[in-house]
Length: 81
Length: 149
Image (tube, rainbow over all chains, first blue to last red; front, side, top):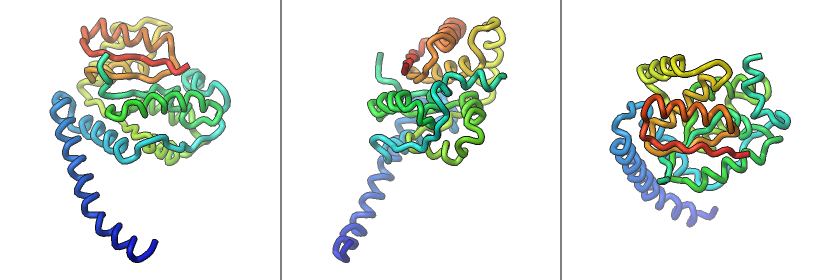
């Protein structure tokens, strides 16, 4: 990145932070008004999920291991064997 | 049905997200959630116990957590009074060889939202658990179960 690009990037950073703070505030207000009966911890879980979705749009690349075919179906059987 | 406010992940789907051999289920789950960017995504205690037990010694808890973070799936805490209510009604309405507490708990947690969606691979126990939960509690909430296979 050239010096000019770095300066441009840094100049935009406060705007980006301000926009993110506004979005977070808006999500907090929406969740608090939509789910008044949920406890504060549950409200925070909803807020955090929505913030993560907002900040990571699109399809994620997941860490996967080979558990074999049908592992998802066998979960409970294995647990209580 | 209105757009769901929240999407829940059953244990089997959480496991498939970490399993190379079940990419089709993981992809189907991701296809669903990317369509619903406004809906928060959650897992609950019994699903989590099953998930970490099933994946023990194969994938680190740190990596499991990373996968859940990538998808914005957070743990939804249920307060202890509500949880005691879940447990009491489960004992009152469940008969031998039907659904288990994990199924019932997931349905009750999903019913805390007016509209919610549960991603699952279970076509038998979970629908029964949801029906009983709705009948017993008289819930007006709408929870849709979406079998991915």
